[in-house]
Length: 93
Image 1 (cartoon, rainbow, N blue to C red):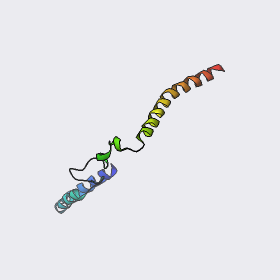
Image 2: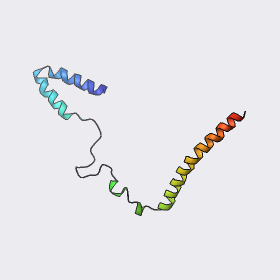
Image 3: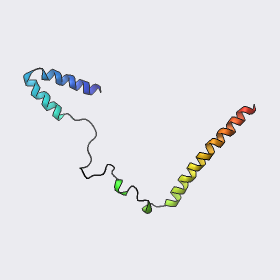
Image 4: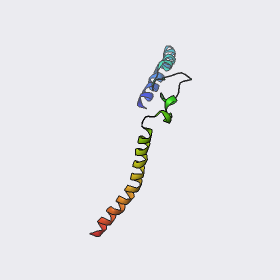
């Protein structure tokens, strides 16, 4: 934000003189900041978007999904069980 304010102040100072007005207009057109554009109008938003959801071609699909589901279920049941055990342990003393 400070850079944008500095650029605006610089352009305002240059625009005060008649010759500086043309320089200020050229400076505004030439100033760029941000990320580069990677593709044209037909390019996907994400580089691998065309192949992103081809789950049929995924290698070791059953193993990966099985481990993922087991991890989610283990955490979903394990965290509350641990919380109850920890609370009961603290209340014993």
